Length: 167
Image (cartoon, rainbow, N blue to C red; front, top):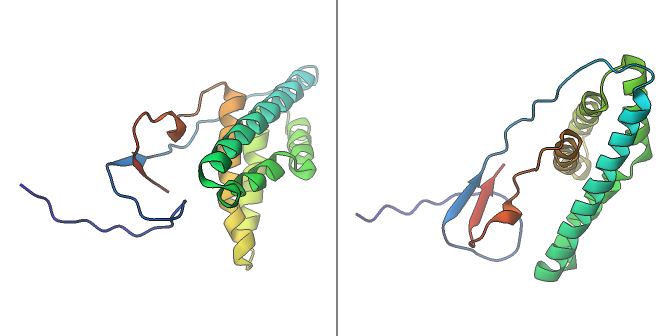
């Protein structure tokens, strides 16, 4: 039997109208381990953090180039904000400082600092800056996946065209 038409409203990520099978992309919250790191082990943690930053920058740059080629520079510009987050000296330095002061692993230190930034940006009255919270969340998630050595399940691996529904 034919099902009634279902109309959903949301924010379009690309221009135009699309129809087709939906792919619901649910992102579960990452479980970040928390453990003590000795002073001697902190240099290794910083190296892991730097490697994860480099890998995340590489991934975002590749994604940006793909979107620019397929949809144009305007749509790819969102990834410029992601790259800026990954190069934010204050965020990087604060993560290292958090690790050194608390003796927590760098994964947990980054999560704590990123959540602090997300909360602060969420409270800003300027709507443009509040919208950057989504960028910070996306980049943080990707970076944490790289720190944990867990591949992120990305929509880029879909083999068929789909209408993507996600938060």
